Length: 213
Image (cartoon, rainbow, N blue to C red):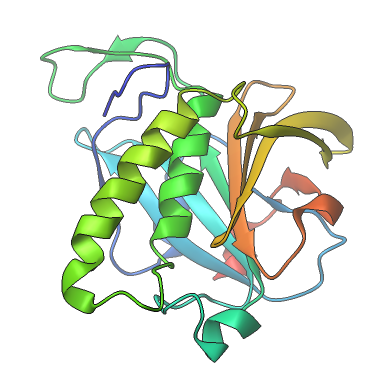
């Protein structure tokens, strides 16, 4: 998909069952919380392009979130942080060979983090039948915010990535927090969470992704 602002991410299909094999297919390293985090770690989903290449994916930390209303007691008790790794891709041909895709960027990571948080969020007072309309509206807002990381909705937060202080764009909402940045090697990283403060987090390359399985 390409909504402008350099946040292009190729149209993907989400892997159904969470299997480490999908992660092992990626030509790039996965990121997660660093060793300071001692809680549970788990696999989420991988984004696979039409040509079969892995484009992005997420690793989970803490409580596995469920799609519940944000004011439900279960949601209030959930403490989780999800790290999104995006393949650092230059301008390239689309998977079906019919066009050209823009390079992935920090905005790509911001969009994926924002839409990821939305997947586990919806207002308590909302009827199930209205959730799709609400989700469409919030998704469009996530696109717009990802296109404007220097805008007033975002602040700056410095967190370690492989031990190196790294600047992230950061914002909070009633549903949780989102951040996005880039590693020293140019890999776009995003993260989102609820119940865990983002301010004390650190990120590092996952040495053995099978440990998340």
